[in-house]
Image (cartoon, rainbow, N blue to C red; front, side, top):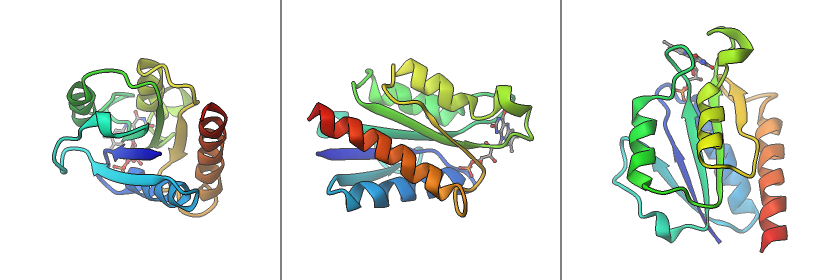
Length: 144
Ligand SMILES: Cc1cc2nc3c(=O)[nH]c(=O)nc-3n(C[C@H](O)[C@H](O)[C@H](O)COP(=O)(O)O)c2cc1C
């Protein structure tokens, strides 16, 4: 099983979530490749069984342009996309919190509820990331 973790991160929070996800997947025996959106060369989606796409939210609940470009670059809707992201409830409260995560998860008809983390996942929210990955892995194993 090979997974791609592709993330967009300006100030590092979403990247930190991606790293925790990667550690957990690798510990579970999955082969993992990381992709920093807008920085690394384009991906070949056909090489992966599972996809973890991560983004922050900004500009009144918007999905960043780089993330939209990445979606176009992928070019189709793979079956197994799990979505995660970082946001900040100070920007418009619960309605706008991590709205890009909700939008992406809906776009990809994700089987999994999007993971939303307030700013950095380090500390108490680390457990939330790990639980979410465990939930995805549980389904991966039952589908295998
Ligand atoms: C101008 C601006 C607008 C933002 N708007 C939102 C928003 O609408 N919803 C949200 O959840 N977070 C919003 N944020 C917070 C970021 O998503 C949050 O800081 C996130 O952790 C950044 O991720 P990164 O460190 O991976 O770049 C905004 C941040 C900035 C600077």
